[in-house]
Amino acid sequence: MIEFQDVHKAFGPKRVLEGLSLKIDDAETMVIIGFSGTGKSVALKHIVGLLHPDAGDVIVDGEAVSMLDRGGLTTLREGIGYVFQFAALFDSMTVAENLELGLRRRRELSDEEIGDRVREALALVDLSGTEERLPAELSGGMRKRVGIARAIALRPRYILYDEPTTGLDPVTSAVIDRLMVRTREHLGVTGVVVTHDMRSAYTVGDRIAMLYGGRIRQVGTVAEIQETEDPVVRQFIEGRPE
Amino acid sequence: MIESIGRRAVAAVEAVGRVGHFLLDMVRAVPDVATWAGPAIVQMRRIGVDSIPVTLFIAAFTGVVLALQASYTFTGTVPLYFVGTLVGKTMMLELGPVLAGLALAGRVGASMAAELGTMKVTEQVDALETLAYDPQSYLVVPRVLAGTVMFPMIIAFAIATGIVTGWITSLVLLDLSTTDFLKGLKLFYRFKDTWFGLLKSASFGTTITVVGCIVGLDTRGGAEGVGKSTTRAVVYSAVLLLLLDAFWAVVLL
Image (cartoon, rainbow over all chains, first blue to last red; front, side, top):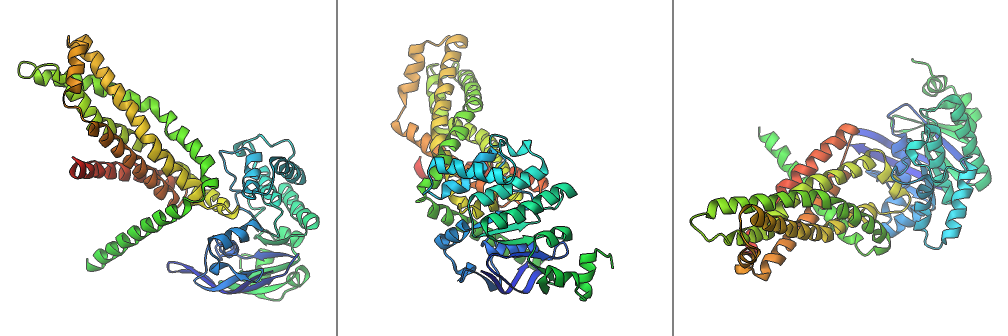
């Protein structure tokens, strides 16, 4: 279980998170929505300790992330897959090497097992046969799928998706959505998805939380959010300018 | 005015603190041999083998010019076999390490800052962390180690090349015999000439790679930020290299 406990974070004078509290249950997919620049990605980075809160804490499986030492942080990260907004593939490595890198960190796996995991993960994202290609040779959608495969290959307990469909055409976005659903169904992982794509949020989310003003404005099931009477949430989900 | 000075002083202290913190993290990452051993071999090839052509090119012409300038200065006043002395001493003690070091500050320091800066702004460094790698172990230690080990080797080649081209120039253009050139070369040679130049080269290698890593990993913004980091890495490296050069001269000569 992941729990944000009254998390505050500022960058210089800009206060981004101001008392964010949210609980994400095991095996659910929580979608965090919100306007651009409201700190959705910042919140996500707190889960893996890429950022540390100024106050409050993020609890993952009962452990406060900010209290973990280097070894504890490594153990935590071994159980979490992270899909970056622009995939963040290592551009000097092939697709297979990108997937292998995280697996090689787990020293108990043999070369053969690593190869099997890579092929399996690429098959799950419909990218079999791209092992030897470089990221620069892939389309935006393919890169995102390789990013997801890199996370899946680790067989994590949690997968964090940062704007997985941003910048993609509607069809490719739907492919990514289907992939996220398939990942949850096949692997049973807990997912946290940060997005402002409402179609994607309704497709993949078990629950949706709206981040507004540095804290959670509303959290509920897809149906509850669709029927909300909160004016801010309504404006966002309907995409109205005012 | 006072506020501006205060702000700059705070920024300077913060920068020193960041560098100290970075170096401490780097030292802490050294025992993680399993992570840095593989990338270190790759970096040694990149920093070492790939830098040889440009370094030897510079050294070759430096040797030619040194021989000609020595002859120009000594003719009529000092025996010409001192050309060998000047070429040897200058290449070993100063021009070999410093000229090659400055060239490598441009080649190695700039490419390192650009590569790490690009990785930083495209979140590849964050991705590495989420894959449970310590960027210090995977990115910094291999580069610094490769620089420290390979610079003395490259510069040893550069020194040898400069002396050889100085000798060829003496033979072809100055009518100096090989025996006379070698006589001059050996005349004031001390073993310290060799280790001093190589020690200096190792310190240049460490400095240039540490600066490249610090500046690269501190990159912010997009392409513009990477460009600024690249320039900063070359400027800082060149300045520190000349300061180190003076430091070693004061301490060891």
